Length: 382
Image 1 (cartoon, helix red, strand yellow):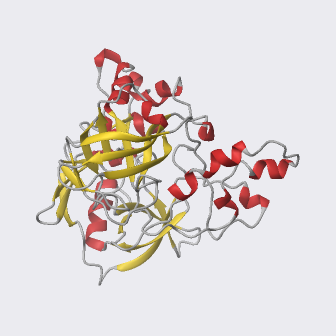
Image 2: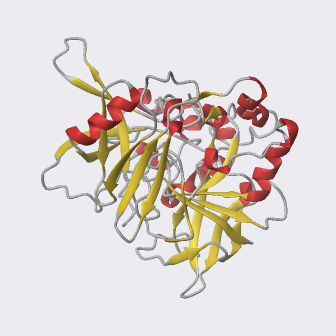
């Protein structure tokens, strides 16, 4: 197999930026999802601001924003293009230039959370926020996670926890207590707060630093569309698109891949869990709304035969979440450069599909109530 495409998303949920090469790091490709937009709302008293996370699933107009990067200058440009039916008296396309690594000394710190995983981010300031607020039509805040800060990896996504669920499930026989039976279906990391793996952490990526998909699976989705339409791979939000798999969806069983750069040592990505899909697949990026008629049924079409993860059996699966690691799955603090055209092979196969598990691990689990609590806004659940 080979790498066909590489993508980053400097601002989470805005359109993809293609790259010809990128550096693998423990927290993802450089500049990938370091920024995120939040809608500013007032509490009941009107005296305190509340930040509501903005993702394209809930704010489809985010699809109207494209991004482009200039790595030599260290900048990126966001372009807002109003939908085609916008009244003539409304302003046309507008652009904003930002630094990929802004100076943070004068920026205000702000606490934000995504899927129950908290971050101490930086408010990008009035001028930038005003531009986005004008485009959206409501008050928003753009925040930035600087290098050295990350969010915690939740659920059984971490390589540290990914192996625990099948082992616990296999050891379930003979348990007579319903409570002990239930806890055997949950990673042990849910029952106690373990240490974060060294160099492990997230920016504003949902669940893992990398998302890997295959061209063969994209083609299978395309065959389901009317009039020979081609599925837009960027709607799946991948970082790495591979071509040359023997069959569509064989990646369901991949445990790790090895990438052979044109220069340097072999690089390994541990693939821990499936990517659970949601309604964002049905958005019309040219209009910033959910597509109508047949074009708006991609999620429904995948529901027919891609609900294959028993951890989230009511949602379809497409792609695998990954972490930089060695051949045994241990984390690596250093990576290397991969490019379009780099050779890739599967270095580990799983005997069965993995099982996605979400849980709220903030402060550890202290009661049965918290044991049963899942993150309400987790991808694929809503």
